[in-house]
Image (cartoon, rainbow, N blue to C red; front, top):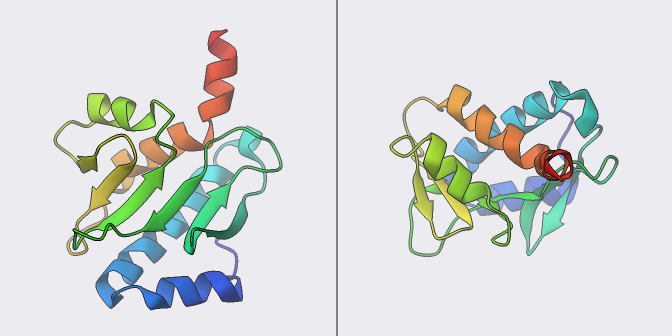
Length: 138
């Protein structure tokens, strides 16, 4: 179940151009659904980082922060990840033609058409369990 939007996060979504905000609200719902499918992720913290909606696994420490926003030079919705992780490289490897990527920090989504839920949920799952996966590999 997707929790109600905290007031400051709601303001951040509504400050975006309408098509981007609408698409990112769909991504928000998928983040919560994906987290709920992984018991080890625990409750997510929803807050703002750099003025953008951000999703943290504070309770479990299982994952890397996911931020939602846009890039200045793009009309796409952006899902932003910590650039010091290997997440974008992993997404590129698994889904080379499914998404557009920017450097090591952003996965870009078209604002129209169907949300690619299956591949996107895999990417979100990898982010939400990033630290768990790295601990298992040690």
